[in-house]
Amino acid sequence: MENNHKLSYETTPRPTSITVLIVLLFIQAVGTLGYGIFLGYSRGWTIFKGERFLNFLPFAMADHVTSGVVLISISVFMFIVVLSFIRQKPWAWLAAMTIQGLSLIVGLVEYLIDNPNYVALAFGVVLVFYLNLQEVRDTFYPKQT
Image 1 (cartoon, helix red, strand yellow):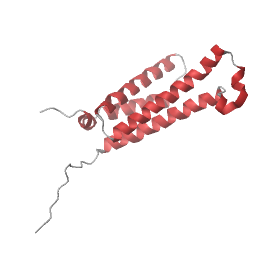
Image 2 (cartoon, one colour):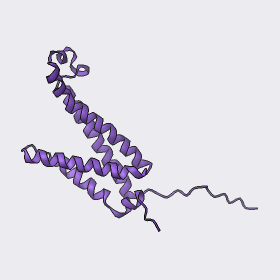
Image 3 (cartoon, helix red, strand yellow):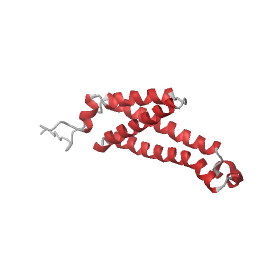
Image 4 (cartoon, helix red, strand yellow):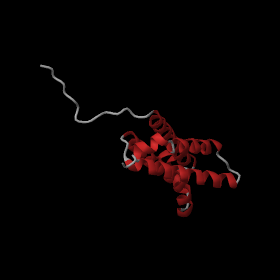
């Protein structure tokens, strides 16, 4: 008697484009986190510089902290999106596209004020390209039949 047990679910291999997106989104999240920490370090956060942080006035302190905190917060959200991509959660595609859209808007504004970041712009364009591949969109938003 043969024992043919089938799994209760089918495992479908992840498309290569999804794997590439996961790696690129992870690199972007790590870069954003690193830049946020760098801003905190260079602007005198107490965890990095000890008492230097106490010399700032409250309003100046808010200015020095916000950009680093915002970038670190965004990077945490980006890591959540990466994990959601790995698990192929339906909302992950929209979240990743929103992040890229905002990133490209910021990059365009920086370009217009003569502070361009060509690497970030190129990275955002590549990610938008991959996010718009048909197999990626079909993975997150399958066609209804």
